[in-house]
Length: 278
Ligand code: FAD
Image (cartoon, rainbow, N blue to C red; front, side, top):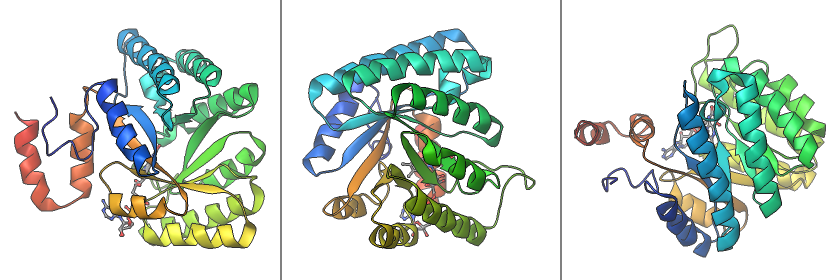
């Protein structure tokens, strides 16, 4: 059972608890992106289990009438075991989701996985003519070229600053530089994409910048934020824009929760240690 202190960031251990959270969000006009927590599996068992749970989840979403999509991690679907394993599991999930009209996002992990992730995304997006989206990271030097490549691929693109810590030869480390890249990437997308732009950021400056680009180019976009982070802003933005909350759930919640907290207040960290060691 998830302790109350962690339930700010994680919707529960079971799909039923996650869907209850989605119901409450939808009542306030916020849509949901459900993520079953799990990554870097080095055995087939957990890969198959999580893939099966995602296929069941898209069924449950479709049957519930809720406004929700799912987001998967390549290493959760077996990328560490081989690109073929990842592609095969991804393809089965997207096939099931496409049949039921549920959108599938692919999270972006560390820079060594970018090629495999974008290649798999492009193939599956072309095969289904959309219905799937991928994340790109503004801190990577390569991303401008990737964003140009993705302009004529059907589907959506989520723009984030990047949660990993890549080496200096492949990434910018300076926060101001990353912000500048983020703005430039958004500008390119609003000018050249037909829509399908997702602003995955809590940063009010980036969101304001996207609003301005929307005014200028008329291109459609959505805002995505994490569960437990700036939720009041999410509800307020949802009065005017499409807002999607990224909702993690599942038994493997401890390390995710710790990551969220180490980004937040130091005081909270002490409380968290107690929870994690319990
Ligand atoms: P930051 O640059 O961290 O902060 C800028 C400003 O935003 C702060 O000064 C503050 O004003 C505001 N802010 C930020 N956090 C908070 C907070 N906790 N409380 C209050 N205000 C805050 N990364 C990946 O590498 N791959 C992914 O697939 C991926 N998917 C994501 C999906 C979603 C929906 C989101 C929201 C993020 C995702 N990320 C992903 C993480 C992302 O790369 C960033 O690490 C993370 O969002 C922090 O950057 P930021 O733009 O939100 O703001």
